[in-house]
Image 1 (cartoon, protein in one colour):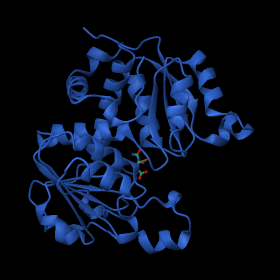
Image 2 (tube, rainbow, N blue to C red; image 1 turned 120 degrees about the vertical axis):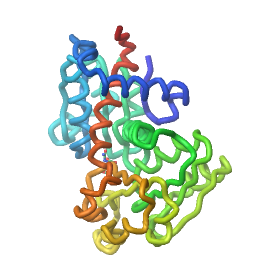
Image 3 (tube, protein in one colour; image 1 turned 90 degrees about the horizontal axis):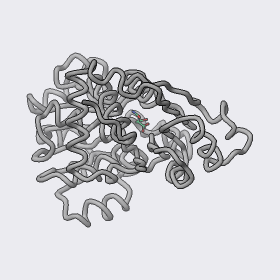
Image 4 (spheres, protein in one colour; image 1 turned 135 degrees about the vertical axis):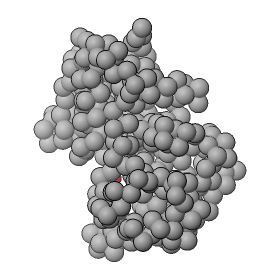
Length: 306
Ligand code: NCD
């Protein structure tokens, strides 16, 4: 039985197969409409979510399966003090696969050790968000035509943003990827990723504070929200929250085929005037999230579709 805790749990070849499957699902949805009939997905969300939880649910429903779960710790027995390990033992009796989001780093890993069904990490604190990374890889490969041979700017809250941490780890496995890390001093990438992942793997990267300076070089711009819920005090958040605002003026500095991605939700970091720019692909990215989660469920449940 396999779980998904980190994007590195799949080899590059396995990832290629998963993304191929997601593209086939996009092209032939009816072929997959009954492939998980009789199977149940549990969504255990101890932290707020719109896209991740609902895209998992939509994915399972599109496959003909059913869903159950909870969307906040308050509405589960966690409020009574139940441990994640006990909860997962119970959920293993009710469902065939589960997606778990938790504010504590490592909670889904603890759950996976006690689980008799596949557990998918749907975001653990500021640590990892592997299914967002699968979504990002599918979006980049589908719309850019390749994984590798590009310069990507990662902009915003690189300290607390788990999507960025997972994406960097996944992208260093592809050839010739250059990273420009764009953040205020206080929200720079944590040392364990800068030194432990980028430097350790001799990856080409640089750090910038001004988005305008990086813009002309980018093939991809990955914008992120300042992660309010992970700040220790509100004043720091207020000082940082509007540090970057991508608007039409800044988009004029970008290449004509640069793509703008964002895991969403957006707050102010992308002005709505950018939404109509053909280079803004963040809403399409959310759609790719459903296809890739369908592919992931099929893969972890080892369902063969002929
Ligand atoms: C991201 C997350 O939860 O980390 N959202 C998502 O899953 N699409 C990004 C964020 O909350 O800023």
